[in-house]
Length: 400
Image (cartoon, rainbow, N blue to C red):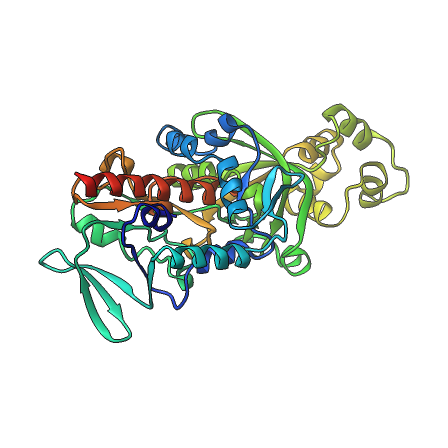
């Protein structure tokens, strides 16, 4: 996106990428449907960036979700708003956008250098690259880094840049997993996580419909309905990702975090208690809950996983668990499994144009900046908006 803005102002752009082809993570984001952005109202949209809302809001105001859709249309790609308010290309694919985009950039004179892995700077301040032909040094008039975070290292986003920038006095926050799954704490006295039965029978299955409630370290209660997936070691999926930052921070502070699952989000507590208190005669508990409340399969297995036999047979305790089943999480999954990362170059270490205070002429954009957001189009939108904004900063710098 920065290359597009710069080349449109007649500036020669050389784009260096460590991978054999451009946009590997962009293509991965499109697997199963490229979620470009989100159609919710702009104030709600920018609030998704939480502690970095103040820094990102003006950048997104300058390149809104509607502007992003118009940009895609300019590449010949129509978009639509899904039922979740997420915005997708009509054909759901990333490759057509990328092909059209690269064609436009090449037509504008952008030169692409593939299999060029950045190695930092040499003693004279030149940029070092490992290339198929050996080491190369480059001394540009201005530099823009868009190196990604630390997830999906096989696509080139491995966070190797972090110590190099830190050594140059750049203000960088440690990289952490974001939009990630979590390992569950012991669910029984002789277990370290899920029981063998639950893992072997239900790992990989979605839990839906369900609402998740979580109280963050500041005492704020968050609740959202959706679905997630039970894994071999714990939980992952969209509903978990929506809370991942707060869960991760609470685990870091306390060593664990407990979320509460409402297995019957369309039922009131009174309705649930009425059904658990109803006489079931000779029917088993499983049969009773299935016929009266639709609880079966994985949801029933989770009740058995978390509750004791005495709790299962107590109508009040069972009703409470159906509306707020506690699941304690002990650790985020490894960063390389995460969809994105938190941490990176702090905004406090840059000027308003995203130029590094400690390295004049070096700008940063995208996921390597210290911000995070849930899935839903927020990651791509902010990455593109920061790229455009940093490019404007480069233009100002070169004109000075």
